[in-house]
Image 1 (cartoon, one colour):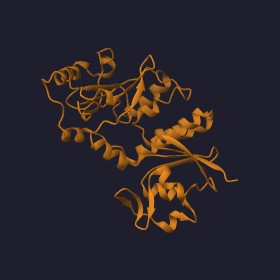
Image 2 (cartoon, chains in turn blue, brown):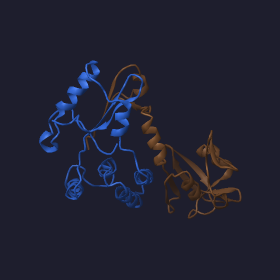
Image 3 (cartoon, chains in turn yellow, blue):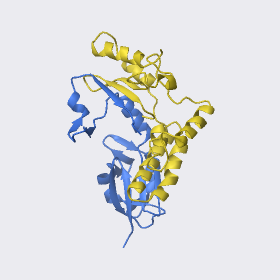
Image 4 (cartoon, rainbow over the protein chains, first blue to last red):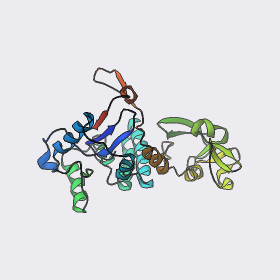
Amino acid sequence: MINVPTILWIDEEGRIARPNDVAFGSNQFKEMTGIDSEAHLERLRAWVRGEGPAMTPEEVRAAQTLPTAADQEARAEFTLAWWLSQQGHAEDAEPHYVRAGELAPHDFTIRRGTMLIRGLDPMGEDFMKIVTEWTEAGNTFYRPLEPVSAS
Amino acid sequence: MSPTLTLLHDGRSDEIPVADLANPTIPAEALEETLGWDLQPEGLCRGVICVPVDQSALVRGDVLDLRVLAGALQRPLVTDEKHAVASLGASHHDRGDALNSLEAPDFTLPDLDGNPHSLSDQRGKKVLLVAYASW
């Protein structure tokens, strides 16, 4: 999971039937995100009612983004930083949070999710700064799977 | 008295005696209990899986070099010498294998009343898992 919202379908046997995807429960943020919630909700209703398919295991595997070595190092840095924060060593935790973000700049569960702990604003200027940098570099903040979120 | 390293790994932490915090080690006899691997002539072994390792670099008397160990297992190791703590992450290969198994890992979280709920409680039903944040 690298951002929120993230949804996941799990079937009756506990197997992933749709991998991590971006979907909203309503269109409250549609103007900002460009994502129509209804596309996912329609597919979800059809799957739950047995009227529409989930993805095949092959499709799920193809749609997943597997973590890289850098992603895992970022998570190790985050774990270390979080432990330091919990122990009251916020100043010493900070470079590990920063390094985690450098290793996995696409991982906003780390970059945005740690902002409050670090005294930054996850809804304000601090957040907008990293999003602007990210998008101006040609990246997308929300990356829904296709075609579920095609409106 | 030897300093102690807090080793964060696999969702837990262990206190490990080390001689040198700059070059962390793990007692050889603690390897299996702590990390689930066993050092054999063919390498680091867990069940039927053995990973080759340069034992001349790994073994230092009765302790094992933690950086060499992490490298052999392709697990990231990051340290904070000042606070004597290290974080041993999961291998991206292991995470990839887990994801490709398509088995949703079980977890337990409390509801608003503090009652725990596990994903496995929902077996037999279709589940929509939603992760969100209120910030």
